[in-house]
Image (cartoon, rainbow, N blue to C red; front, side, top):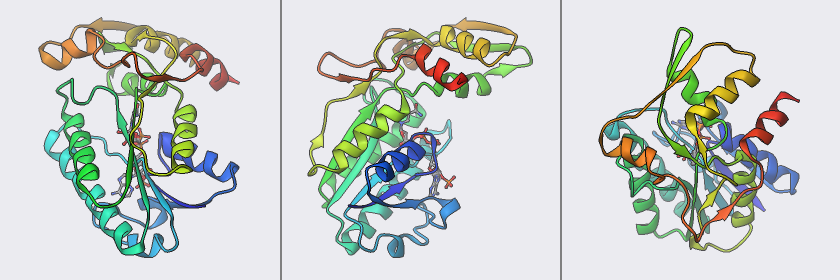
Length: 248
Ligand SMILES: NC(=O)c1ccc[n+]([C@@H]2O[C@H](COP(=O)([O-])OP(=O)(O)OC[C@H]3O[C@@H](n4cnc5c(N)ncnc54)[C@H](OP(=O)(O)O)[C@@H]3O)[C@@H](O)[C@H]2O)c1
């Protein structure tokens, strides 16, 4: 099958491309480094020639709801328009568990992305996943000030990006399915504890302070809003297993 992966150079996107190629699919990567700008639409229509399904795992880094919404709206509209012109029969978007239960600036864009996909004419699948194991390193990098890391008090249920990629390709190989069961990691973890273990495994020293964040999003982080509900699927690799595999 010929697949296009929007954001195929990213954290999960690189796994999506790898899994698809391992299974013998013909993969086109849509990212700026591959000459396609999904926000402006540059290079998109040529890239979709002959493509049967598009997997959207593009993302932006922002703490602004306006910027997040503008990014995901532009990317999704440009993809769906180009897919319609190219006769693509399946649009698959990766979203995040809890986006409609927790008020977060980035999530505003994900809600808009899902809304546009559902309202569009290209048959679709939406998979929501919890945070990837990589999130511990990302939040540590963002929230470290000298030797001190200030980490929000947060219950997470991290999942292996590789397992998310496997599920994404399973779904891309099937007909469009609408919203499918969420995918979370095998167990709940405290983010500050994950960051401590990540730092230790990386040979880093320093202090990790766990700080409750005020407001509705802070509450959602603490009270388990961002973990899966009972009707969800779960990956196998724990955070510690991922750390050990990463060290090898
Ligand atoms: N991170 C998590 O824990 C997590 C959990 C659940 C779901 N998700 C969702 O999974 C998806 C991927 O997240 P991620 O963390 O893997 O993303 P990421 O590592 O930040 O990668 C973003 C990708 O988007 C591409 N991109 C950004 N701007 C672009 C543009 N204007 N045109 C074309 N490509 C562009 C980047 O490539 P270039 O820079 O080369 O353009 C890169 O390939 C997102 O939808 C996210 O909401 C993430």
